[in-house]
Image (cartoon, rainbow, N blue to C red; front, side, top):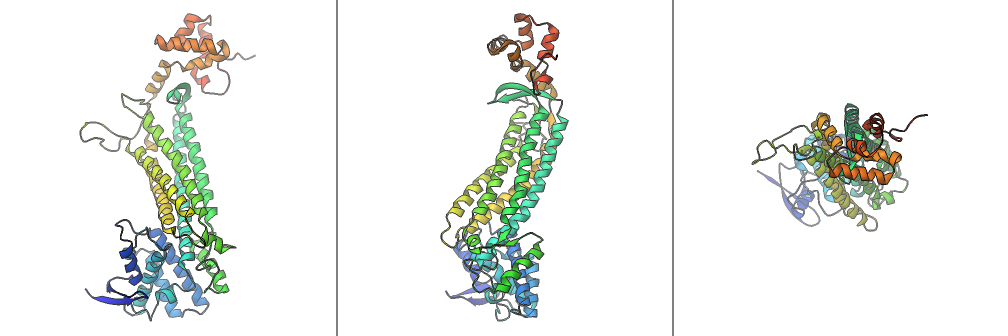
Length: 468
């Protein structure tokens, strides 16, 4: 295997002839050799898209020749198609505010463009990574813009995934609309309710998440392309600054807008904190839902056992027949990771100094990971858990009838103290409220049935109230 020699202001390095990246990428690979994942490819693809847009604009402005611009554009398209995924080798966690990631793309695009023009990789007289591929750009306007574009696309997908989850929960709300069960507060018996009502509440929480995520896109639409290093636009012409935003709008199909104050967009990353906060809220609801499902399905004999979750895989290497709620456990861990990522994003965004935030790579990796996990996790949760949930109607009714919660229906008719006395006696003597009422009150059986009708107790109003 042969090598080529590349040089920079620090010195020189041998680069394998097969590699499309160059000396800057190799140095970054050495410097940030953490043994963890590389930069998210979704971010890489959007950076390549920006390089394509810049080449198109610079050609229109006669800063790049037709031949050179077309070679760069073709190389960018090949990167976006995933043809060079193996060439993006820099750790996701890197110093330099993302400069190494931008350089990695610049070098791969340049060397592929050189090949397209019939040259050999490393012959930067044909296409230069900085002078040509990075013309009129800086990492500091390219990187955050690419992150915003990637996040918008993923937010749209997540909004759709959440809408499907909401619909699945609403379907269960309808399916379980006639299943009476015991409602609980603080894990203690509370009041009768319909299992459908429980799932309806879950659906409403996911509905809010869907709407929040959908609206979150608006926060990301302002971009600082053309602002270059610190937002002042040095080394980018006025015409380029106006044209680049229009071109990236056309290529992405997104309603992006040029910031009226790019220095702000370059300095401050609070928008990413805001969007991450919406994802954390979503994770909060998903974790609560997953915990509830695991509790409701616990058992099957020693727990609540009011619902049955789809059986997905054997649950133990030593306990035969044990099946665990692995899908709710999975989405619960996804939610926890999203919450942890939100904390990382908060810390990174608040640690920026003066005209740039050095910790953008952590923000990018954490935000994109949260979006990827939620997108995949929500879909798996819906497909492998929610749609297959079965109600154990007999267990629900049996648990309700053995409780004393119907005593709440007596407060209007007997007062709180007398109702509490009847409830305590029912529990102490292992009797139903109905039986104790017959022993201790003068209500006729038909009147007792009216007051203790559990269907009435699940609705607004006073149970058994006589209508005039």
